[in-house]
Amino acid sequence: MEIYIVLSRENITLPKSEVKAVLESEKIPYQIEKDLNGILIIEIPDNESYIEILGKRLGYVHEIVELLFETDIKNLYSAFEKFKWKDYIKNDYAIRVKKINFSGDIDSQKNERDLGRLVGVNLDDARVNLKNPETYIRVTFTDEKILIGIRKIKIDKKHFFNIKPHKRPFFYPGSMSPKLARCMVNLSRINEGDIILDPFCGTGGILIEAGIIGARVLGVDIDEKMVNGTIKNLRKCKITNYNIVQGDARYIELDGLVDSIVTDPPYGISASTAGEESIKLYRDAIFNMQNLLKTNGHLCLATPHYVDVNQLIRDTKFIIKEKHEIRMHKSLTRIITVLENLN
Ligand SMILES: C[S@@+](CC[C@H](N)C(=O)[O-])C[C@H]1O[C@@H](n2cnc3c(N)ncnc32)[C@H](O)[C@@H]1O
Image 1 (tube, helix red, strand yellow):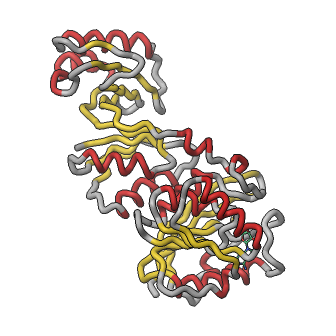
Image 2 (tube, protein in one colour; image 1 turned 45 degrees about the vertical axis):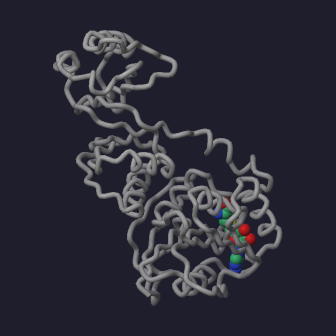
Image 3 (cartoon, helix red, strand yellow; image 1 turned 90 degrees about the vertical axis):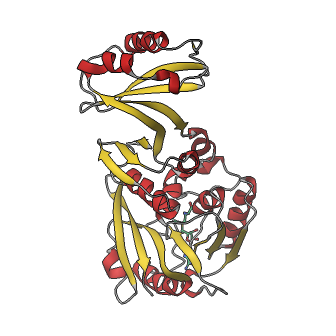
């Protein structure tokens, strides 16, 4: 089946990479057919559970739509007339128009009404239901083409809103946004049941997102109050499969190897480096991480722009797979790097 995924525009490169990482880690065969600058058209096997998985895991996505057909403005009405709506609409339906990167001038509500009538002509009993339709027909206008499909998933933004750091039982400045944390967890190619480690866990933002998608979470922080705070935050989110301990990221020892590591080490003024100069601390911690992570496992790392990641991984078995930039403010850009462990 063909689907299209409407990406968040909060960042240029992260949303698409997040989609690819989840498809890969969930072993969903896929082919990206087209990238319409914020909308990915993807071919995946005809299996509703794949769409559910994507909906449950992705952070930087707005909606997932099953693509029925594509057309252009000139042929929109005739294509609607010709299409066999009966095969897709059994009870009630609604048509909703959205414009994405569309510079034309159209009246969305008029289109919804007119197209709705054309669909209705082809149906025997089905009724329009604008409030809670069984079939939600999404018509997406872009400059290149118009995509028509059935909306399968609308990503629930409530989760990311309700779980914002200042709403948790334990808050400390420097906590990461839940959406970025989710994206980093996804970029680390983790799956349900896998073990994930955050060696600088702070208030537990990364581990919460990993726990929500079903990973077993391990956290370390040098500061006892962060350790207790992370435990409180995880409990509040009903995450039970965790082990959070006080320790130094440079000297962590584990019984076995972890499947992935996702972390946001301290930098600058707001996060303590416990007296260590940042770069040396990062390098020592990364050296230790390559021995904790399974071979071909991924480390997803957030660093400030002035840290040279190539220098950090020199003489380690890590290789850089991808790199993304997030502009925080005028003088700080965060770099998200995905590394693979060849050790
Ligand atoms: C930037 S914060 C992590 C924020 C976290 N991602 C969150 O959302 O809350 C970095 C954390 O590293 C901890 N830290 C500093 N030096 C450390 C070390 N050597 N080993 C382990 N943790 C350390 C600090 O106590 C701080 O909580």
